[in-house]
Length: 471
Image 1: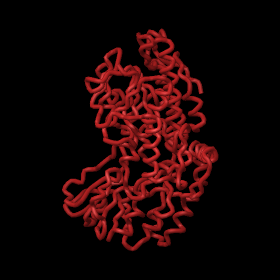
Image 2: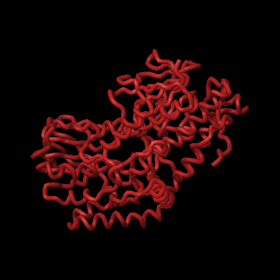
Image 3: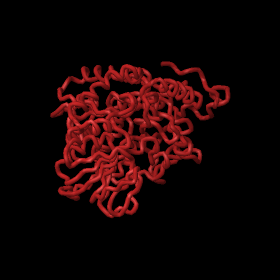
Image 4: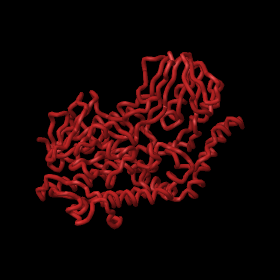
């Protein structure tokens, strides 16, 4: 039986394998694809690059050397390959986790692989949301599944969605296509993209300042003037500028940065369609107002399954899947442990998203916690740890209360931060520094460590909330 099975060989899974092996744990990494890299393997669209400064986008124990302030997809993928190779991380490729079931003492994966512990490292930017194009007979693909064999030259192309990916690839394909129709349901706020390369600690400090604004929307209203400047300097047409002017506070949706997006939309071969898509026809797209644009290809920039990952339907404990327990609103203690799912740890789990920092910072923060937990289990001889329900409930209540005051919830928009039930199951409401302090040392008092139930451990009904956990 393996000590730890890690699901996924993206940045989270690679980091987990390196850290846990360094502590003497037997680790096996399962990867369904034939190559590692996660989102940086899958997203190969033109212009794909990190929207977090490169100096902050690497493991602290393996700093990257980047060619520019915001590294491109190929450079990041190469960094992950080199880092994995240097640390001896060799995933079992072509192994998709179809099922993972807790039998009371271990996890049984695909009915044949047994592990004391599972670390789920599937990542939130992994499974694209691909709308049904219905009767459309032309070429269709999502930005995360870019069809490089399809020649866009001279084609009439519709892009659906104006999120982080579209902001990057639209300027890249605009000069190639004959006509580009950009279907925009909500105008994004786009800040100028800096080009200066700064040291890691300097970037961290600057980005942490943004977290103050995320907690105080009035501050973000001042910062968003940079976006207004970015728009005005590129778009002279009053009507187009009006359609591109957002009606929400900066930060309510993901921060976007580009120096070329707005200027691309001002080109003669681009039409902004400031409406949602109503339907598809064999030859094109019908907008919400009933007008149709005939196109040769449709490219979806419609995001990912953040709050409904498929892995949640495959992880089973006590006869219920994670998806059954979550019911559309993922919850975990410290974004890492879920009551009723012993010896399971999530990386980049619920409510650990930050609008201002690097995923690598979150990953390493969680790995400190997971390593602390597994080390404590080994030292004490605990075969099982299961977070107490009252502890998890109190923590999530605290998170949701804090989120109500943030720009994520109070910024006046609907974003992917909100799940199917309208609950913010994505974002962290405080600073990254507070996250690093809060999610640090495993406390066995927060867990059932030797069998039994949360009720038996606390001497009270498991559903009763405890006092607020410490900050």
